[in-house]
Structure formats: C-alpha cells, structure tokens
Image 1: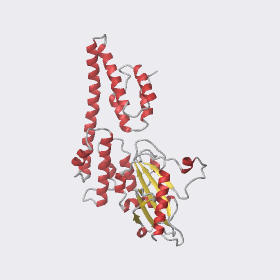
Image 2 (image 1 turned 45 degrees about the horizontal axis):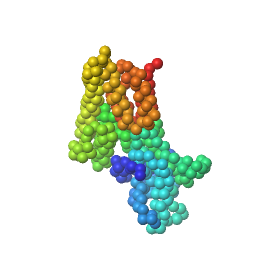
Image 3 (image 1 turned 30 degrees about the vertical axis):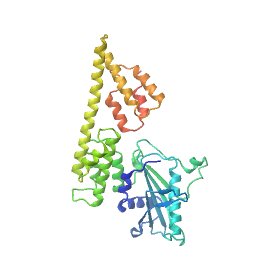
Image 4 (image 1 turned 90 degrees about the vertical axis):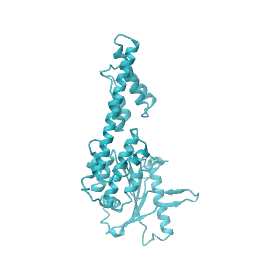
Length: 348
C-alpha cells in the first residue's frame, strides 16, 4: 500500500490552505472567481460492496462566479503508487455517487466537476502513470476531468503555485538538509513575531514534523519517541531555529566521526600488516570498505555496486571520495545511483 503523508493531511485541514489551491486551479483553468462562502469540506469515506473501507485524503466543494459547481480532491503521498490515478478517479466517482444518493448533490442541472490533485513528497523523482499508460491505450484515453500531480521536492521552481501559503509548504519540503535556520527562514515571510495565529502555529508544527522526518530518514540516532518528547513544546520560530541548529551540529559531528573512524581504521590495518607503505595501503583499503558498506545500504542494484567496487579499486587514497562526500549524496537523495557511479569512476 502507498504511504500517506500525515504532515500535509494535517496542515491541509485548514480551509485557508485548501482555498489557496482552489484559487490556483480556478485561475489555471479559467473557472472564474471563487465564492468563498460556498467552500465546504467533505469527509470522503465509503464502504464498497465487498466491505472494503476506502478513504481519500480531502474533498472540498465550491462554486464560482461563473455558476460552475466544482469538487476538489487531494491526495498526499510519501511513496509511489502505480495506480494512483485509478485510485483518485475511484474516490471522486464514489464520492459523487454517495453524494447524489444522499441528496447532498443534485442534478440541478449537473453534478460538481472534479479536480484531482496529488502531492508527492518522496525522496526520488516520480511521475505516476496516466490512465492511457495503465491500459496501454492511446493518449485520447484519459479522465474527463483534470488531474494534477506535484512532485514537491523535485518539480521546477517556476511551476510552484504563486501563493505565499503554498510556496511556504514547498520551500520547507525542498530543504535538502538543516543549514543555519533554513526551516525558520522559510516561514518568516508571512509569520512575524508572536503572538501567532492558530494557522501560523500549524505551519510551525509542519516545519518541526518535516525536520523530525529528515532526522529519522538520515539515521541521526534519535527515535520517534525521543523526538516527540524533545520537540513537543516547540511553538516559536526561535525554538525551531534552536532545534534545527542542534540537528546540524549532530550531523556535522556524525560526518566527522565517520570520516575519522575510517582513516584511523586504515592506519591501524596498515601498521598491523607491517607492509611497506602499509599505513597508506591500509587506509586505502579501509576507506574502500567503508565506502562500499555505505553504498550497500542505499539500494544500489548489484551491478551498480559491483561497478562502484571496481572503480574504487583503481583509485589512490587521494582520489577516493570521502565518507562525508558519500553521506552528503545519500542525504540529498537526488539521483543517488548516478552520483555514486560518477564518484566511483576513476580519473582518466
């Protein structure tokens, strides 16, 4: 089953955030202005005849000043889902059917038109298959209503919606690693000094949850329970900055520790063997072993790992990438396999 991103589910419960998406799509699709009083959130849940309970993330109905009735449905994914578009279409159609049968929606003269949105926050680039691709059909085989997919961490910056609220979510999502006070800085354009509104606090909570996920994804040594306990009371930008700097300090220490450990291990192995220039050879061997250990834990294909091993064997100590170099590539989580192969390619 695909993994849902609870951080975005929580922050998008705020009508102010969802309304920004609605304004964005009304402009994009030339639907007219939004009648704010018409925006309503719906619980999207139904039980299939086979008693399989299915839930979509969010559904909001609204009307425009052009007289259009619309239905906005959003999914928040942190993992890939090969049949995402099929799942979204199912949610939309079943919601409309249930709304019609309960008389929430009526044919006067038409049902609301769906707009589908998927927000993806996984570490690797991903574009879900279209209906045509799923069924092996031509490009004309598509949904009769618009569906948009936003890969939040990788999409071009110019395609991010021009909304301060939404851009803030994208800015936080796209922070590669804690650096200075990057998370707090992303919030500062529209969150001034306290007292904070409830919505502003929700965005601070979103930033804290994103920083916590980063530390867990990158094996910083904390457990979810420890993070919940340590960061439960963070409610201001200043406190968020302190938490971010604490993570950065721990990351720098971890990089230095692993680098030092690799070099020291190499020296010890070289001395123990008593070879001529054994210290240097031991260091080279130890560095290679440490590098391969790291690479084996990032889901490289066996043939890619073998190519890396062969490349590293042809390098001197000065030519080998450092442990820190490799960790930064892993942490960045962007085209990791290609960058690993490039780092392991011996110089001409």
